[in-house]
Length: 194
Image (cartoon, rainbow, N blue to C red):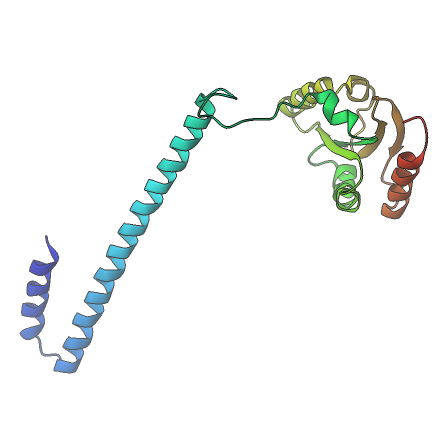
């Protein structure tokens, strides 16, 4: 049913009603506003669907083109060793969801990240929450040359401070305050033999 026919039916209905003319005008005005709002809602849903389709299409297009193609985006190639060469210290959070020690250390780890944002420190998490997360942590540790850290440090809720060469320097646990953890990181950043 088109809106013109609906308007005629509404007007015919209210012309025969016993309502005051002012009330009839009010009701018919509300109908116009409601129809207008409905049209805008349909338009917004359509525009949202169109935008979503465009984003998905763009994502598939970018994923389909190999790096460095004539029309594709240039993606910088960074090897794991390049990541570690630029870092003097690696802070590895051993984490698991539901672990009280992990929950206590999460804010400390986050604050250390903020405090050392300008320092040559790589912050990573090894998540032990599920089999899938453990496998991802294992792959990450292998790619970064931190296999010994992954294999030797399983106690969740700890932060392992690691030299850029992959050797564990110190373990920070829940008994250490944020200030003490930051001091220990500064000590390892300033110290020789990293």
